[in-house]
Length: 161
Image (cartoon, rainbow, N blue to C red):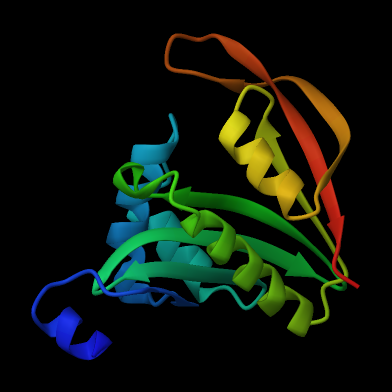
């Protein structure tokens, strides 16, 4: 029945799947809605073409409402970005996206994953902590917002093995 809901324009259930080159414009739109310095379509096209970059999209029905991007090498990876459409935040969808993305990284031999998160981003910190990440470092004045204010980044790590 999900296909019928999708066909009729309903939202259906959430699905995490590999992103494609055709998704680049929507991924750039989502990134821009989520971060002060959004990545452009060309940046997503480049990442989607790299063998050492994993990009998943989160779809609700036929709409892409989120994504996760990681770059990996040897047995380590770094989550570069995760974003959810602001209209769909707070529904637990990011957890499913993150855990599915981590599972795909583990299947590729990744044993340790890192990420950076703004220290004041409470929802993201809770998401990562609940997913088993721990703070292992701090970068002072790492982020800069539109007004020029600087904020700290926390470096987080999780073992996948």
